[in-house]
Length: 95
Image 1: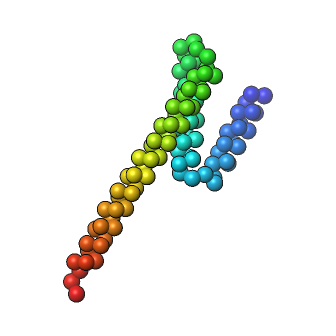
Image 2: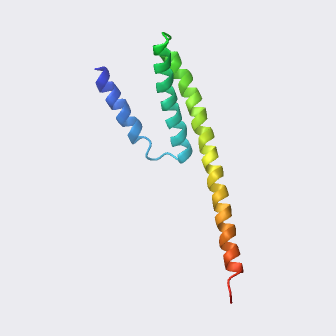
Image 3: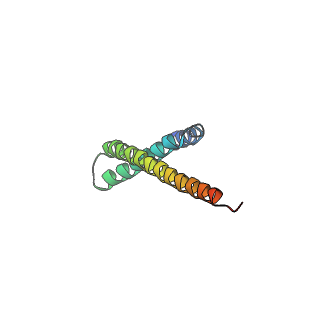
């Protein structure tokens, strides 16, 4: 029964991501990865995997959000450089 619940949850999570923005996808991915890592880590060290998953999800979501902000800044810098180069080439083209 647990396998069926896990499969249904995974399918719903994957299907539910299709209308999400990049920020939402990266934040949710970070939360999922963090939850898994936290649960496994606390299970290995004889803790409560539920609290490990909760803490890992929080840290993972924050990390995913920060990573998204970094990627947006990186894209913005690239686009600014691309546009500056394009304008420079246009302005210096021979007539």
